[in-house]
Image (cartoon, each protein chain N blue to C red):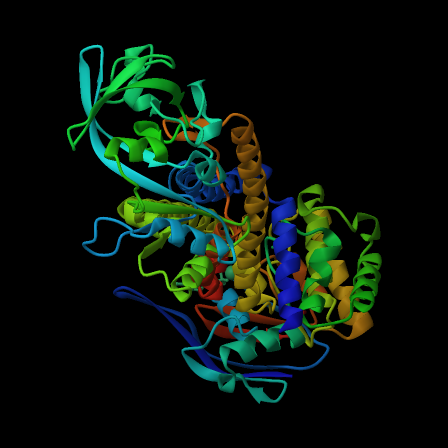
Length: 401
Length: 226
Ligand SMILES: Nc1ncnc2c1ncn2[C@@H]1O[C@H](COP(=O)(O)OP(=O)(O)O)[C@@H](O)[C@H]1O
Ligand SMILES: [Mg+2]
């Protein structure tokens, strides 16, 4: 058996080394392309998802979000809850949000929006929005009559960049009117404009908690949500479990939960798209290798007959061709990996620009391994079948061809 | 060494039935150099293929080295050909991707002979046929006569019990033919190699020590050369 395999490998290596160079290069190139195709598309999609994840965590929800349970409207007792949450291992900082529907007015434009009250000192420790002020400054604790507005609400200088209805180019230092549902209507000094690149974060408007209390004219110890930043490297679902264990009764979701909820369908579609790409690539690989080996074997029918005549077992002959495809696949995978890596390198320096940010391909090691394995299985099949067919031909029939 | 009893081979081609061999019986002894002669289409190749286990008779039986070959499985027949028989074909049939040396040691490799041994064996035999300076040449870098001598070396390297050759000189000029036939003769005499060779050239007769003549699938004479 080992001797037979050694002979097969010997024949295969000679077949490749001394066979047609052109066909060798072309076959390797095609397999490399197929491999690239299998890896590249999913890597872009993965890159896309990664950007969405990063933005959700960095500008929107932090790592974990706590919201009111069931049909409650608010999280009660926020100050003691914050204290409790901040003491839980793995939690870096929690920040309370109170969101309320308002109408914003500026120079005759008015739009419905949501104003979120925050404690800027807490918020700075949870989201990076404060680093993304395109104009003016972020809020500070205790400030009154100040508001910061997201670029999708304030509007760009060049209206063609706007996505949807805006106030029509509000700048830091301008004055906007905010009408609350309780009847209070108040002029605010625009302290800054937010431009994070994340669509949701760039739609909001923010005031301080103190400002909210002055509008409501009472202490507000309840919130619409709590967002939490965990320590770097912490596994969020563990912190979620911890939160429940520490007696949190509200609804706790990690960013993974949120993403699944928000992008569930999209992610499903993506993975469907990936599967289709992989299946199509594999079929191309199978067909190409099948044809290559079929041509090789059909051209060698006589010679295969001769080999059998002089006593070479047909399995040695079949395995010769199987080894040839496996060698071709190995070369293809090596070239393909080099191609993928260089494309990734180029796209890391020059990323794709998407509305939600810069997308660079993310190559998952598991994809590399899985696709390589699938490619090997496919090429084994594609080599075995034609070789088997020709090697089983009657000796004299083969020799007469 | 080989005994064939009442061999017949019928080819069915649609409605046409060809009786390529009709009841051939013969016995070949060790050390004989047998020429199978006859007109084209008389059944020479068919007989050689049956004796060489490349084909199966429609009727009759073949005893090879004491074994009734009917009892062998396909795999055992392959093994048998590998270990005990040698073949030389009309068109040399060297493996194009292999060098001279590799072509010669291929079957030894399949037999599991250690590398040093099969290298030594193949070098020795190539030396003997005068091609030791062509070890790493490819088949298309050799003349027809040289290729056929490599093919003979390939067939001989395992010291087969019987060497079969089907018109080995048909593609060669008379000079090369003579070379090849001299080589066969030499092998036959010096190594007592049993050889069964098909030919339809009258002047080959003087090389054989027994001539079997076929006509229409039957033996019409079986004599030493006159
Ligand atoms: N595979 C085959 N199918 C049909 N007829 C065949 C086949 N091989 C040989 N024959 C016929 O059998 C007869 C003997 O052929 P063959 O043994 O090749 O003759 P020779 O070698 O003496 O020229 C011929 O009539 C030939 O046409
Ligand atoms: Mg013939």
